[in-house]
Amino acid sequence: MRSLIFRIAISFAVAIVIISPARAQTIAITGGKVYPVSGPPIEGGTVVIVNGKIAAVGRNVAIPGGAQRIDATGKIVTPGFVNSSTQLGVQEVAQVSDTRDMSARGKDNIAAAFTVWDGLNPNSVMMAPARKEGITSFIVMPTGGLIAGQAALLDVVPGTTTDMIIRAPVAMIAEVGDPQQAGLNSRGELIVKLRELLEDTRFFQTHRDAFDRAQTRPFAASRLDLQAMIPVIQGKLPLVVFVDRASDIDAAMRIAREFNVKLMIGSGAEGWMMADKLAAARIPVLTGAMNNIPGGFAALGQRQENAALLRKAGVQVAVIGNAGGGDEEAFNVRNLKQEAGNAVAYGMTWDDALRAVTLAPAEIFGVADRVGSLQPGREANVVVWSGDPFEFTTRVEHVFVRGHEYNDKTRQDMLMERYKTLPGAHNSPPQ
Image (cartoon, rainbow, N blue to C red; front, side, top):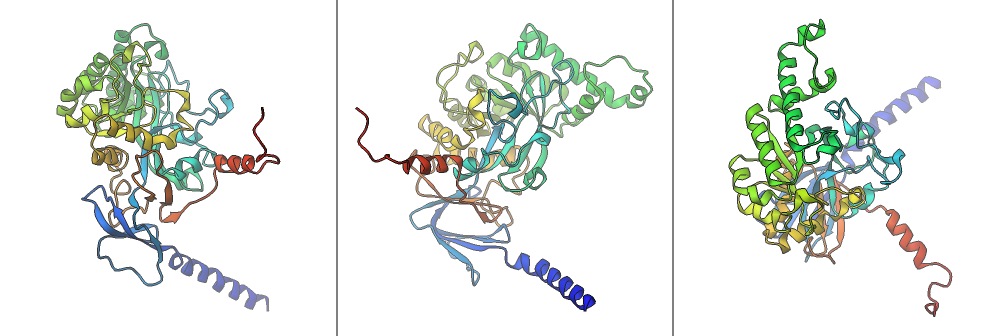
C-alpha cells in the first residue's frame, strides 16, 4: 500500500512538472496601435505571448486556440520601459542608513569589486509602483567614490535577485565630476587618480604571478578591485562616468581613448556642448529632461533640450529619471514616462523618446536580444497604455513581465483606499 501511494505521488509530481509549462499563459493583445520600436508602428496590431516570450507581432497574426484575449482597441502597446539608472531595491528611505545599500567604502574611494545587486531587496515596496507605471526592467547602480562599483540589469518580477537578473554586470560606474566625493581636492587630481588606477590595472593584468609572490610595487587599489577593472581595460565592460561639465566629459573621453575604454556618459548636463564629439566617438549618454535649474557649478550649462540636442547630433541616448542625482531616485523610478515626455516637449522626437526608454538602453547595455522591443523570441515585457504614454493623464491598463500580467496593489493604492473610506470622509470640509 505504501509503495502504491509512493508511485501515485511520483506520478502526480511528474504530471505537475509536465503540465505546468503547458498551463503557462498564452495571451493575444489585439486591436491596439503596436509600437515594436525595432520597426514601424502597426495599426490594429496583435501581440501574441506564449510561455513568457513574444511569439508573434503583426496585423494579421494567427491567434492560438484558447488564448486569453485582451482588447487593446484605441490603446497603445509598447515594450516595457527600461530605467537605466536607479537605486531600486538598494535604497528605501534616504535618511535611514539601514535601508541604504548602494554604496561601498572600498579602498581609497575605489570599490570596483562591489556588486551592488548582492544587497538588493527583491521585496522592496518600491518594485510594485515602478512596475505599475510601465517599468519592467531597470539597472541598479552603485554610487559614491571615484569607482562606485558594478551595475546590473534586472526585470521587475517576484522572486529572488537571481530570478530577476537579466545580466550582471552590465557596467562599471565612476563619478568624475566631484573631487571631494572621491576624497580629493581638484578635478585634475581626480583624473590623475583615475589614470593611475587604469595603469595599475594594466600592470596587474600582465604581472599577476609577480603580484602573488609579493614582488610588485604597491597599487592604488586592492587585488579584488584591480581584478574587477580588467574587463574595463579590455573593452569588455563599459565604464559609465557620471559627470556634468563639458570639460569633464572631454577629460573622460581623453582617458577612454588612451586606455581603449568603452565609455558611456551619465547625467551629462552639458553634454549638448560636446554632442558632435560624443556622436563621432559613438559614446552613449544617459540623461534626463526634467531639470532646468543647474544642480551646481558643474552644471551651469544645464538645458532641458540636452537629450534632444544629443540625439539630433546622432548620439545614442537613454533617458533616465532625475539625471544629476538626488535622494528621490529610489521612489521616483516610475516617473520615467514624465522624463521622456519632457524630452519630447523640449525637442526630442516622439519615436526617439520611446526608443530612449526601451530599445536604446537595451542596446547600450547589451541585452537587446532579450528586452527593449516587441519581436518574436524576446521576453514578453509588454505594456498596454490608455493613450500616449508620455501624456500625464495616461494610465497603464495592462503590464506584462516575462509573459505574466501584474496588477498588484501598491502602497499608494492601499493608502488611497484607506483615506477614501475613513469615517466622516464625506462630511463638510473643516471651516
